[in-house]
Image (tube, rainbow, N blue to C red):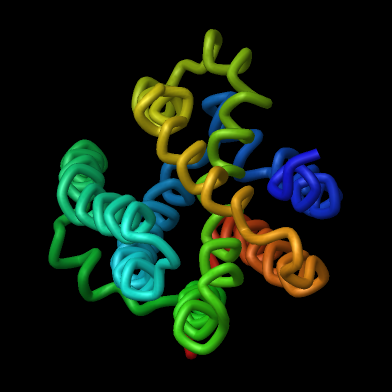
Amino acid sequence: MTLSARLKKDAYPVWEKIFHTPFVVELYKGTLPEEKFKFYVKHDYNYLIGSIKNFSILASKADTAENTQLLTEIAFEEATTEFAGYKEYLKKLEIPLNEVKQTEPTFIETSYVSFLHSTSLMKSFAEGITAVLPCYWSYSEIAKFHKNKLQNNPNKLYREWASLYLEEDYLEVVRKIMNIVDHIPSDFHYHKLKKIFLQASKYELLFWKAAYNLEEWHV
């Protein structure tokens, strides 16, 4: 069993809750109220800024030149292509970009980004890269789990959004991050990686719940 597979197995009770959280289920069915999706998009856009910074930190601490290049490429991709995609969604949802930029982060959002940054800065590269895997990987697993619902999803925008995580370009990024994790030296303390992976997975679950509940409380 690969290291990533072992981590996923240990975190699966959390992932199963993610698969069945109301936001995810209703989005793939097309019944999610638009105000909840707008809330999610605004906060995920700002989360993305923190993610780009985090990949830059990881790139500077990478254990090989190849990993430095890969993580720099991911940061660049997020800063260009993914941001461009978000701007298109904002237009379709009729949300001004300035409104998104002025959106105050929720407590969960701030806590999650702080967790990623502190892990990458203060802990080992192995722990830092493990912390980012649940976000990327769980999105692809959510899409696989619910893909049959997309056929009857009446909301075109939701279908477009969800389908992105089934595309080969996205899945290739997931595989690259998994590959880095799977090549963490076997003598590294597994319990440290498991703790990090579980915590990141729980943040993913809380992020979905906060979006569904429109939790506007801030730090």
